[in-house]
Image (cartoon, rainbow over all chains, first blue to last red; front, side, top):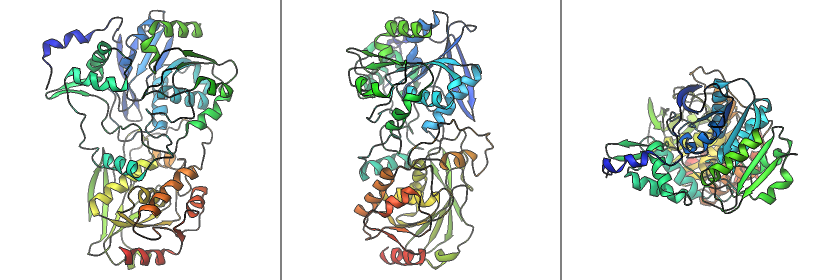
Length: 308
Length: 215
């Protein structure tokens, strides 16, 4: 059932949150991507990249802090996420290609990028492939580790079973008729709480008003129901770990210390031997996967200092 | 006769090359290729119905915008065909052979043997990543999709990962030797698959006779 409408307007705002000043669309080889911008349109561009199952609106508190320091802050909903097109196909490489389309739509120059979770992994690949496109890179709990990453659909899982595969195929067989489960705003916020247990209820309710749409039978997350997390695939985080040392783009990594379902379980100490020279890693004590949402002010200060 | 099956947002063309009772055969084409128009070769002597599937972005199937191909999603294509026709023996050329192997591991009771033949895309992109590149192609939305050629011509196939599918197939299949390697090419992943007990090398004709008899 849909919650009484009168109950909902109070969730349209959140302390410190500001919706983007501008919206635009970028065509990435026929897939339409929703791009958001905060701050002065003539300011120097700074890109924010969200993680798997998230959307650009999750930066509504963090982005304004950077925008108010003079940056033109740009983010986008990945294909299948937020208000971007639901695509026929999803892959890591396609996400990286889409990211480049958004960068190209803005400027041909090297730009600084702040990326969270899976977005961090994507941007490390972009930094490796086209180092001249990125001036600096901040990765928020998205550096590779030996453990598989839960918000990447095609990670390596050597333990996958015949049951895992059959369930994935069953999901694919029904993908064309699957719809996300409708619910009240409260119900969607509660469901999200399972993935984001450390984030406040009011923040999750606020996110519902952006990341979900209201259908006649209730609210639904906009995320393409064809996208399914976990699973199997040939990709190994070990590969990017081995290549990290040669990264030419200045790197700042922020790591969580409290493990969460969505987290990458990156072990700060295990990472040290793989880091490129001059890379800086800052672990956040008593902090989960969404460091920039738990500590927006402190992360913004660190980012602004690093970009100086 | 051709019917169109829905796999997420893609319409897949499933061609019936021969109708009839008895065991079913499903042909999976190579990378950049399409289903044959008529039966030929060893498949002509198959004692039952014969079907052929055009993968996403190939043949008469729809070509999606913006790429994003993976071998795993093509396994989903083949599984949608399997759901439509019922349990079947699979013959795959090149990339289709690799997809047939994945499907045999994932649906070991419904894939009544898979024969892997030479063809485009059999090798894939090897065990580990090559240089990091961002692959974009100018998008002409016609088959074969250039994105499919680029992405599936370089998809990674770590030996341990692929081997797991062969193990699942031999472990759960009602057939004694559900995987037959019938071609000459031996990419690293296929060498690893050949080490799995129950995987055999034999000519296509022998494999099909065996699969038809057990089906």
